[in-house]
Image (cartoon, rainbow, N blue to C red; front, side, top):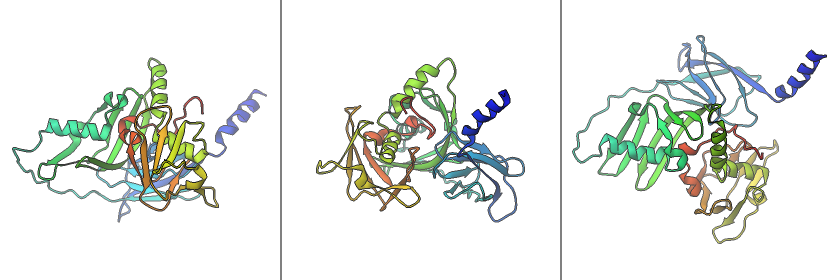
Length: 321
């Protein structure tokens, strides 16, 4: 009977699990790519391709994009995948360009550019203050005094240790630009949990603190229609309250989308800091119950200052959930 009990306990863990498999190739060839990173963007869920270029990965329920990254290649983003279809992923090599070195006595020093990059990319919060970029020397930084623009690029993953939240983040940066008070950057990243028995209690508390009032919590609250329970309020710019049903719509398959006719303001009652203004760049934006949303939203205010140093993986759940 003991073995039967073990099987019965194991079955619920397998229900709903989806394992995808595939192979990674160099674009335009049949050459396989070993040691490529395959992961769900912004999660703890990842693996690497073996010496034959093959991989298998158990994925979360939902539509979080699958990312395939490798040093020297452009990352591939796969939005449609399923367990019954073998994936063939082709990575394009990055073009190696000779970089022109311009000597300008008025340009910022490397140290000043690093400080600027850390402030805009990692952030300025308590969580960000305890983040360290392990391979800062791999990041190329350029500052144009003429335009007041800082740009950054990195051929490798940017390796980040977040001591306060207990995570290691590998961030594959696609672009970074800071100009005239506006910062824009994009990329793909995967987490590793580095909490230990010695720091697990304080890390647990810090993660709960980072989650409260975050973009991730807000998107989950929209998906679940629990804004009130989670202490969020949303208004149009004329201070008229907004109902979730008026801006979140589901299709026939149950997928949910945000459609904002106007800019809205978000107030998190658990924190008295400035509200967040939100609008979208396209007509509708997919949101997932894990807190994932498509990159079609523009955030200004409190939630916008939450940068890489405040990120949590989509698997994260606070105790009260």
